[in-house]
Image (cartoon, rainbow, N blue to C red):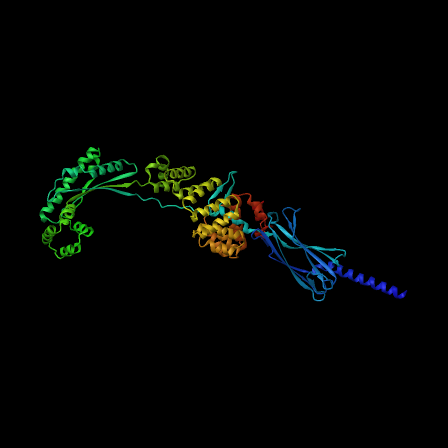
Length: 595
């Protein structure tokens, strides 16, 4: 009987000691250390990863204990909302199970890792570690006091979509909202320079004569010259500059005679042109006739015609003539050659006995505003290049009107469909834009610019996967355009690949390049970049405030944040829950800005 009593007492003591061991874990829970990385938590690519290193002191973890750890993300914005991470069970060294084991004598540590999907309601929040301990798997569970081990989530990467408002054209959606768009590729041309046009007429004279034969006066080229002259003279798009008349003599006659022939032929040509201008009622043009000073003998013209001819011995002819510097001797040699080479006599020398009549015009020089007005009122007087430039420079509905006019006149130019599509994207007409880009792709298949812009359309429609495919396709087609790389850089930020984004952004200073630098830890680089960006967008100032907060520049935080919320008051609520400003949450100046 005594022996039974002793055995019962032993059982009671073992149970009591075991129970006390578990209770002791509850009592001494404050001795357990927790290190959270990162703290605050950070959102990357729509996910919130967390790593907790839990350290247990020696003689803490009961050998038969089960300890269940469950972190909770608890919203400070909506007190009713909380989100559980995965649970992790740890066990004492005498437990026969497959959980991580903690030594009683030496203590130990365990690294907990988990990731949850981001939800904006948890931007301002805290992480609570809730634990319960039991002796054995089926023992009574005792709750350990909840421990707050981290505060909030840094959500700065989500500013990437706001950066589109700073870096690119703004889109006005059908419901009147303003959103950012990916970077389009819009082919442009330089401002057209005034074009010089020249109408030419050449009339020929008999050998050693200055009068103009009737057949020369009536040849078809004369009417063609006059018709073109009259059209250009009356074209409001052209400015008449004048008429030049240059007369020549062939070098096979005496120098004094040739001198007189050049003068006489100049007078004859002037009289002829003057009479023709009067018939088409362009008398004012006669005041702009000028006779050029020309050589008495056209050696240069002779050499040029011989060089272009099919004469078998043309090189010999030119070498022989170059042997004589005396023009009289050369004249005699040419006469001798003309007798030998019939082609000189019939085809070369007669073409040198001429007057060249040249009417000069220049297109009217216009300002950008004038190009737009002419394109709207009288587009037919503009050249193709000028009309495209006018559409390029137009604003608002005028851009649509002029591009449509251009497409009617030049329906095979993919650029106009492409550029009009960009206008439609900016105005929220995504289906119209897609149809135009499909047409542009038909006209110029696999053009990187068009493929990129189709990606922009799909982005605006919310099909981010397809948009990415098209941006990558544009790059693979040889589209090294910085706008294509920019779009891929934005996607890299959204996927949490910040260094890749920087490599894609290149040297151009943009909001999102500064953001990527900030996310890689290069705060000074981010500041340098954003200071090169020129913008009055609210989010531009907001990012400057975030960069200043990382540098503990309170005055810059307040001044930039004040500008941001003045432009977009909704940023007040965003800023008051932004953990980037956690050091300022209790400051009166900060409160005055965001309340």
